[in-house]
Length: 257
Ligand SMILES: Nc1nc2c(ncn2[C@@H]2O[C@H](COP(=O)(O)OP(=O)(O)OP(=O)(O)O)[C@@H](O)[C@H]2O)c(=O)[nH]1
Ligand SMILES: [Mg+2]
Figure 1 (spheres, protein in one colour):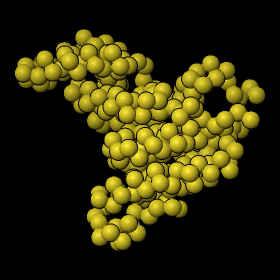
Figure 2 (cartoon, rainbow, N blue to C red):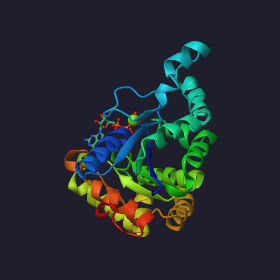
Figure 3 (cartoon, rainbow, N blue to C red):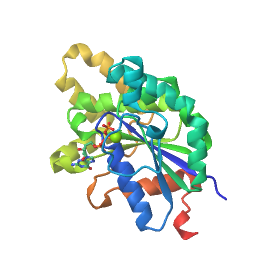
């Protein structure tokens, strides 16, 4: 049996991780392919899907808050570290499904998964050889050039921390006008246009810093193609799937098996 592929959706709070997890699994289902969903957010409320494996079965944010007298932020940190303590059980649960694709929805606060060691440990423990990260960029935070650059920096930070194949996804594209979309496309394809846009927005004192940051983005994949998604009509799902096939199957489509 072929080993399963882990697909992580990571991004800032509200960037659309849970919605994309739901849409992508639904897309798989409609094609007769097998994918399960894993919720790794102990504080998740009202998920748009019913997770097949749910961290909330092991860890409850409310219980941690009550037991340790913590507020939601402090409790989230304790929970994030507890995820790592439960990876063996989570892995067992996932394996029991014998599914080809494991779609992993990560905690709302990106820092809990990306900056703390627990996230890295979880990814490594589940399956570091067959892991792919889709980094979600929220268009609401990418409409200005400096906002867009900050998002790319967070994406690079995620790649630096987790060290896995990673592709940027511009989520919720339906909230952008055609003009806004065109501008973002220009920025993501042309370092000079992005540089000019940032330096026009910001005072000249930032020029040197901007140059350094844009070099970093250029050198570490910031100008690669984005996958565009939106929750209606499964927009972008085929592209996500193709990216996975290219990464792991050399472009061979598992649907043909
Ligand atoms: N217009 C539009 N709204 C979307 C789309 N995807 C998600 N949303 C909305 O954006 C909000 C956040 O979506 P979620 O999927 O919960 O985002 P998340 O990243 O899981 O959020 P947290 O887990 O809280 O960080 C919800 O109100 C969604 O309905 C989309 O493609 N288009
Ligand atoms: Mg979510």
